[in-house]
Image (cartoon, rainbow, N blue to C red; front, side, top):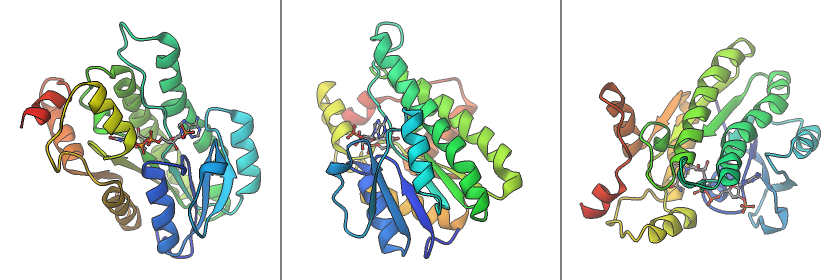
Length: 243
Ligand SMILES: NC(=O)c1ccc[n+]([C@@H]2O[C@H](COP(=O)([O-])OP(=O)(O)OC[C@H]3O[C@@H](n4cnc5c(N)ncnc54)[C@H](OP(=O)(O)O)[C@@H]3O)[C@@H](O)[C@H]2O)c1
């Protein structure tokens, strides 16, 4: 998938990893719809800003009626703090599933016909190593990302016939404010290098997308996948903190 001359839509472009996706797509020569549920917070030169709340189907339909030239969909936006499944707040647990699973699904369903009309194109779903190694303190998120991994694999199969490349980015820890706040709330201090710089991760992801990779993994994502041959295990943040 050549990003030069492509038309990309990025969800959650107002902060975190989404800003880097939108910025780097512009640098690679793509037209970019930088979307956010609070579009007034998007501040990226060279993009078209669009309001989009991925869990609101009317908002998704509105974006799809405007961005009809999209051939690359980056499903990046997510609400990531659901707490633990047994003791956490049920509304937060539902909100995490709504955004990570149903939000991605609404986007795929709305944009699959657009991608087909525009030659097939590509979808990149931003998952997490937490899909494979759960996280104590945020197991609701890990379970939602596991569901989104299943969704990604299913959609890849379902859209193969229309020539849509469906890729997953599966990172470990990304140095965005959201993760830094989570780590601080857990009372941890991570060593230098434990978190990937979001600009580096966006570059890895876009290189992988251009190369046609189905799963794009950073080091922690690759370790989490390798661990699947053994018994299920947790994503051991305390091990990293102690290292
Ligand atoms: N940070 C990590 O360590 C890490 C690790 C692995 C995977 N990931 C994944 O990487 C992606 C980006 O993470 P991040 O750290 O950059 O997150 P972030 O800084 O918390 O940003 C999340 C973005 O998603 C948007 N968003 C949330 N719900 C939305 C909705 N219903 N509609 C539209 N936008 C919505 C947020 O908008 P508002 O500003 O309006 O809330 C924000 O722009 C996520 O899919 C996350 O699961 C993150």
